[in-house]
Image 1 (cartoon, rainbow, N blue to C red):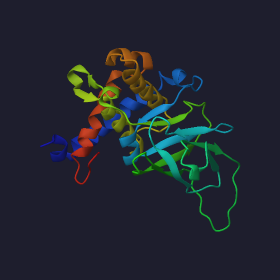
Image 2: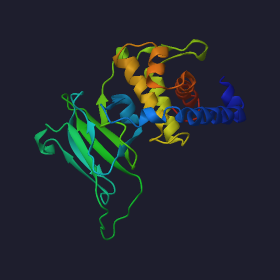
Image 3: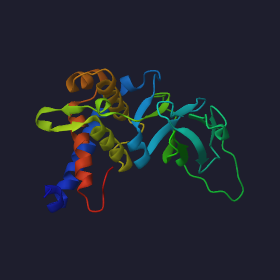
Image 4: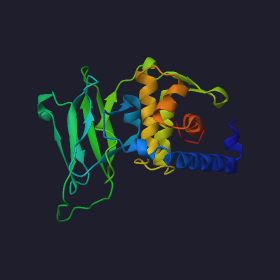
Length: 248
């Protein structure tokens, strides 16, 4: 039996440690996070379908949600509150060729009778080459900070792209475990989506997946403390042991 199930106070203490670790890790990486936006944040398709991913939008810039790495085409797109953000696609939805949604913040419009939200969401339904439909949801987070990246790229990550990470006494888990842990930490408010350490963790994941670097090398290059990676990797296991919580 998981100890955190028997001793709730211990679990709360562990979450507090994670929040402290994330907060402490934010400051040394601040300069790194302010670099010019390059590349995309790659998110595994299974994780994207089962989680509400935060996507940042910046004044005067377009942010992309790209499905070009999949066999999926856009079928339907809806922004819950269109008063501050508009979208376009790279092809007409009816053509079955649209692969990318572009989000652009605008000056606030007034729609009589409509409600508004500081952070609204965009729902995207896709259809793949076999006719299977998938529904994705993203939280649109407006920010005035310098751009972290050009947007989100959805990819059907293979086991090779989500390698096993051996972090010594910290345990062994996959890159996808760390990614899931990061999403949970954001959703539970232990760190903000636009926090510099979040960007560093995403850079770490890209390095271990795409450049075949060791955990230590990737962490050093991304500028993230290895203890953050360890704590994030543990979160999905703890969450899956909660009553009624099951991560796919």
